Amino acid sequence: MELKKLMVDSKSVWMDFPGLEGFSVEVANLSRKELTGLRKRCTTNKFDRKTRQLVEELDDDKFLVEYCNSVIKSWEGLKYRYLEELLLVDVSKYDPDDCLPYTAENAELLMKNGADFDTWVTETVGDLENFTRDK
Image 1 (cartoon, rainbow, N blue to C red):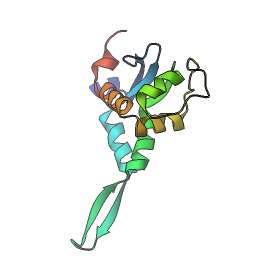
Image 2 (cartoon, helix red, strand yellow):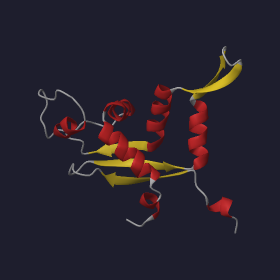
Image 3 (cartoon, rainbow, N blue to C red):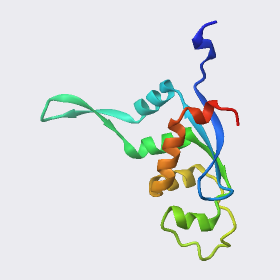
């Protein structure tokens, strides 16, 4: 048996977000190949006039969008009252126990503006054990 036949590009699992009861996120672990491809799609070469050389430049906004779409697959149980613990919002017009639906745009905004959520996703996705242990 060859190892390359056993390898997969990604695997997703549901993980509970700590401290926010009922809030679970489906996250995907990406292979090194997938992460490298993602980074390449978000990198451009620009000519630096001072050094007269091509310089790689990462488009941070594009990378965030691509990264979110690749690693955050869905969520459930993100109550409006939980949003106040993750970022600065005004949810006074909503029932605090109603849930914000998952959309790619909501995930991007939460990653971009919620430091704790961004850190948790990055650490969770980077920990291979989360994707290999039996749940």
